[in-house]
Amino acid sequence: MLLIPCPFCGPRPEIEFVYGGEAHIARPADPSALDDAAWAAFLHTRSNPRGRHAERWRHLHGCARFFNVVRDTVTDRFAEHEAGG
Image 1: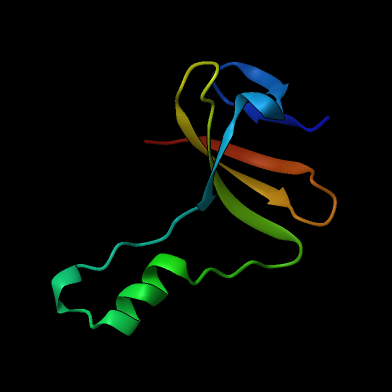
Image 2: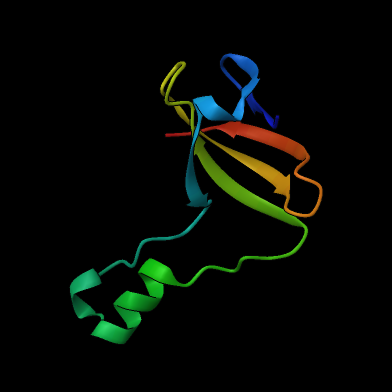
């Protein structure tokens, strides 16, 4: 079982969490100025790298808080975390 390091509650089993996608995605300054293709790219296109990747998680069945972590997508090891949102 994967243990996810909640910065507020400590390491907890993955079934307590919800994946929030890639971290640090900047929202467009003026979304109404984007055409359909640009808006679709913002909503759906992500880097999906092999290796270290910044992710957003929510500890849904615990403190219910959001936080960011860096996880290696090959080994599933978590490298660092930061509180957020």
